[in-house]
Structure formats: structure tokens, C-alpha cells
Length: 152
Length: 239
Image 1: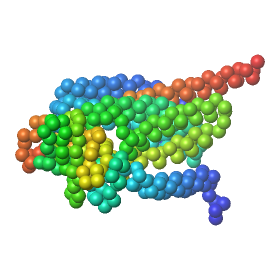
Image 2: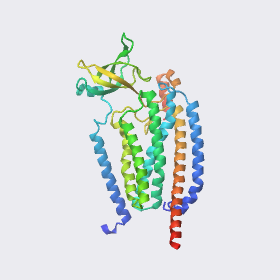
Image 3: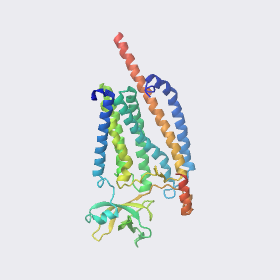
Image 4: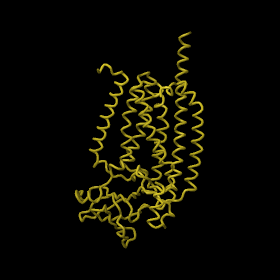
């Protein structure tokens, strides 16, 4: 029965088994890396497992609307990074990227202070996957949805 | 199917298809890039830097598509032992590497204004850089194995094994937190307005035609090389 298998088909079966094993190995590796390969912690990770004070980490999330304040020295800013479940206050002094705005994504590099404030040494802006022309900004929410729906 | 894999028939088709693809690809690319750079609107948050998308995204897709083609050709080579499949895989490597490099360079130039950094070691950027290194390794291995007259099977196995990186690139932004945003175009629809999506689609078509034309031209060159070598060998035996 097995001898009826042509060499061509034998090779095909062998390679398909090898490829399946390879994909399984890659998936297992990706699964094992799921924490280490993440570029930043979200606020709820930080609330569940707070890193040691002073340890260099990255914190990523959304800049809470209305939380951005500039301190009296004019170069230091304070804002809150949230992910819907937890919130972390952040302090930073320096130049922020152009796309850093309230309600948008941010990745802060720095460390947690003993008082629970995140002291950022560097800010990176994280934009979302939506691409919208400027003119659409003046539309109502319903018009926007319609405009985007047309492209789908 | 096997009819198209006949080298003589392939050469007959490739002779007119190569210039046709290159001319159509250059025209579509020039038109769509002019559209994207001058006619498309500025993006609501990113402003004019969004125009890099028309080069960055087609290059990324072709960089990944190139390796997918190498993997399929390698499978055909290993299972059906078809020599044209081996030639197709080798011909795809250089344009694939070039597009992966364009993707990385344009992404870096885009990252500086959009994110505030030229480079970060997040999942997407790192896995794309790994793809470029895989291409370079593949090119070196294919050349070495051709020169040594060694079995080309090891090259095909490398082409097949390297393909595990393709889903990793795609899912890197979904599995892991990354600075790079998740895909805008999914089977669920587009998060990109039509003003950007249409020139992007035309640019992708144009880039793909150029890619196809270059692959066919390289395949013809490799076939001509093989033919010339066989002729020289015959003449050497006759003398």
C-alpha cells in the first residue's frame, strides 16, 4: 500500500509534515516571547506588576484627554497615560514629537518613581491605523463614518 | 500547468511580457506617485509626511510577497524537481531584498517626524530587518551553491524555512505591543480614507508590475547563462 506512493508524493508529504512542524515551532516561540517581545508595558501591566523604582522601562498607552498640563518652568509637562483600566501619571521635560497630543497614543521611556509617578526621559508618539484627510475633520461623526464606510 | 513550466515556452512568453510589465509598471508607478505626492490631501494629524505611505507600504508588501514567492517556488522545486522553479526563486531574491530595503529606509525616514525616532527595536521593525538579512543570506547561499556545483536543495530548504518570518512580520503588531500601528487594511475593511487608498492601490499595482518585470528579466538572464555554459561545455568536448 505504502509502496504505491510515488516519490513525488512522498516528497510532498514529507515537506508538508516538515513545514507543519516548523510552523508549530515558530508559533510556540512566538507564544513564549509574548511578554519579552512587547515593546512597552501598558498601565494595567504596570499596576499588576510594578517595576522596581529606577529600573528603565517603557510605558505605552493613550494620553488621557484633559490631563496634559505644562508646569511653571514652561518645559516640563505632566499628563496621565491610561489603557481603560489603569492610569499612570507621567512627568517629562523636553521637546515632544509633533504627533504627541491628548487622546493619542504615546510610548514613554523612563522609570517609575517611588511615589508612583513615571519619570519619562524620552517620548515617542504612537499613531493609530486611521488615515483621514484634513477636510474630514470638520465633518460630524456620522459624516465621517459614512465617508470611511464608502471606502470599505 | 506543466506546459507553462517548459523553458522554451516560458522564454517565448517572457520575451514580450518582460517589457510590457516594465513599461506598464513604470507608467502606473509614476502616475500614482505624482498623484500621491501632489494631488492627495494632507493627513489630519501627520500632514504631508503621510505621502511616504505610497512608497513605504507597496515596498513592504512586495518585500514580503517576494519571499512568499521564493517559498512557493522552493516547494515546487523540492517536490516536482522543476528546474524553472529554482531559477524563479533565485531571480526573485534580489528585487525582494531591494524592496525590503526601500521599506526599511522609507519607514525610518517616516518614523523620525511621526514617532520622534529613526529606529526602535519593536516587533515589526525587527522582524522586517530580519527579512532583509534572510534575503542577503539567501542570495549569498544561492551564489555559493551555484559556483560550487553543489546541490541546490539546500537553497530551496532555506527558502522554505525562511518563510516562517512572513507571518511573524504580519502578526508582530497584533501579538506584541509595538510602536508600529496595527494594519489599516484588513479583511474587515479599510481604516484609510479613499483619498489615500486609491493612489496606494495604483502604486501597489505599478510596483508589482515592475517587480514581475525584473523577475522575468532576471530569469531570462539566468536561463541564457545556463544555455551559454552548456554550449561552451559542448564545444570543449568536441575539441
